[in-house]
Length: 349
Ligand code: DOR
Ligand code: ZN
Image 1: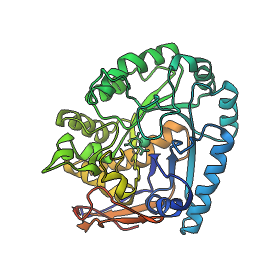
Image 2: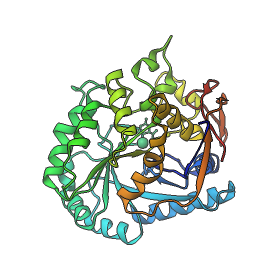
Image 3: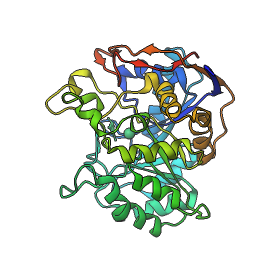
């Protein structure tokens, strides 16, 4: 079977940035996806519902300008130590779909993130009451913990205690990278009122940490949470392709200008939006599970967030394509993951 038609997918974790780069960036995602859940880690971060609504409008305008009038950006709020429960009420009234937890210092533009999660308990309690999801960047930040262990330690030190304090809270464990995270999400009881699900990126399904060091240091494979050992990649691949509704697509496509990636202190983030569905197809196909792609890419996320499934369809084909060396991003160049390499699948539209 060379062609596969599936329901148009959604990207449940995406970085679009802002300003003059927005039309260039949004077009890559809107070409393939119906909706995307847009991350709020701008400079300054999107900490109020008013800012989120204004940002949403700028994305809609940019998508229209790029020729995609039907693309729907879904919005999140950046949680800080000072976010009030009343902002949660406003978020729900205004159709925001989640609140994003960045532990302070964990990743790009996370300086304003949460320093002590217990200070946010009243706000999180309100989220649990209203059913608004908490989207979690799951890494501890203390220097004593090895960068490859930050996710596993986060589960024991932060995530599990948080879910015990707020048993009704809806949680999305974002861009999981370890077997420990897969096991934690799988084992969480489905009868819990507070459900937990996880997004998985294409790059964590396709690569282990060797990719960062293959023949020299390769900055375009550097992201956070960082790529892990093969045993973890295998666990992610089984979770994504196994049909469980707890796992769904979130690219975490995170554009940075070429000169800031290829830099003595390069930024974290892989740009995958332009070939997103092809990368996932390659991962699913590698284990003979291409038929499971539609659920993962188009159904599980919508169902978790309580949103309607998309009606349109897309078609992909098992046909080689060459990834461009770069794209334009405003006045800068943007290098995609797999630049100038061949991919096995192509997006037909
Ligand atoms: O690699 C990453 N890049 N991880 C994140 O959590 C943030 C993202 C970004 O915004 O560049
Ligand atoms: Zn992200």
